[in-house]
Image (tube, rainbow, N blue to C red; front, side):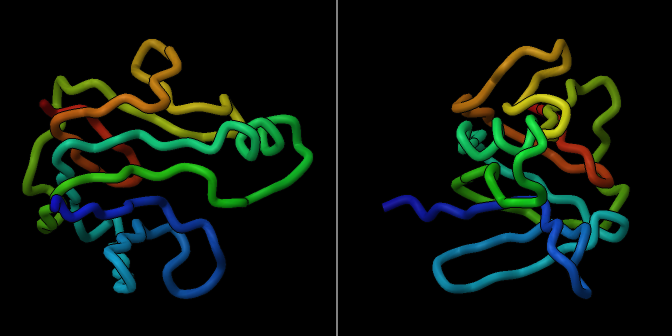
Length: 126
C-alpha cells in the first residue's frame, strides 16, 4: 500500500500560522516556507468545492478546504531547488474556488508528477 501524505497551507492562528502543514496518519509536522522547500511526488490537487464556493462568496472565512495528497515528500533548506521557468499552481478560494494553473484554468483533481514549493508558492516542476 502506498503511503499518502496530506500537505496544506496552515492559516490558523498560533506559532505555525503561514507554515506548510504535513499530515501522515496521526503525525503532524510544520515547515516555515521562509526556511524550507517541499518537493511532493504524484500530488493530487484536492478541493472541497462547496466550502470553497462559500469562501469565494464571503459566506465563511478561513476554513480548510484544499490540500495536496502525495505519495512522497522531500524537505530541504530554502533555495535548494529552483523553480525558475516552472509553472505556478495556485489556490486561493477568495480569488477562485478551485486549484488554478498558470493560465487560471481549473485543475481540481489533477495529479502532478512533481510539485515544489518556493516561499508560499507551489510550482509544477515535472
